[in-house]
Length: 355
Image 1 (spheres, one colour):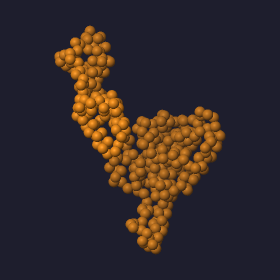
Image 2 (cartoon, rainbow, N blue to C red; image 1 turned 60 degrees about the horizontal axis):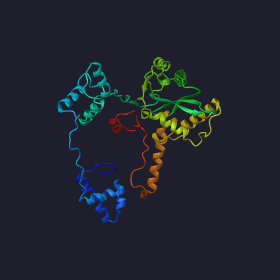
Image 3 (spheres, rainbow, N blue to C red; image 1 turned 45 degrees about the horizontal axis):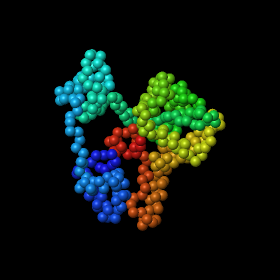
Image 4 (tube, rainbow, N blue to C red; image 1 turned 120 degrees about the vertical axis):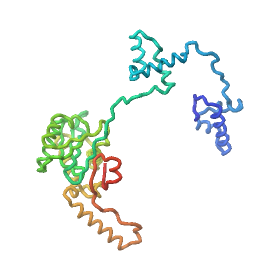
């Protein structure tokens, strides 16, 4: 409401003075109260001296000689909104009219009239909407994979090694990885083909999700996916939330206590460290999104047995000391289906959905 440089009407000024009186009566210092309102104390003094601060300025008594009359103003609006010019800015309209031998008004006049009519804005979408990627449901392992590339610092300043990593979104298991000294669609395609070969997997119908990087959408990569029968899925441009599983995995990797603080000395050193991380992550790391079982347990169906044992432990503890349990025991039911980029309805109705 208040603020330096603003012109306040009579009602606003009276309200401000009333609020100041209340603040001072409650023990506040007037200078501090004025500072909170963004008004100088001298301004408040002048308002009070004027009996409420009515604006004494009368404004111009004459009409500017160059003011547009109603007909000229209407002509500006009709031209700006005509089918020929409605998609152009005044900076384009005025020169175009000049090429036709017509002068109606200057660019600034066009802008002023449009602004006064609340038309100085984008009246049509200037960029086509980008639809959200299709949601994919994983009911078991090797149905939906997510992959991405992250940087690993090398010993040479300004150069990096590139970690390619593929994760199964249902089990969170890292199913394959590689480290190279460059981003390449060829390396990416070779990694996907090698994973399928090592797992002895028929990938027909498997969904592979990634962002929009050139290695992900390169011709070699897409040709390999087509040959294997893999369905490609891509994030929206510049929307990192569309690839949450890989982003979360890379955060875990780089925030590990044992992640090297110094750059990797060589490509082989980087590969050895990543190999150790993958072994730990798959076999030892208890993942919070899958009831704190390891990705290997989830991937190979051993999580049910582990979670059942935990349930019995909790039930026995409650029977031994029921006074410490005000409700049910912790939920150790195995996580159900997992959705990639679920719709809002799926978020609230599907069990175990994690984006």
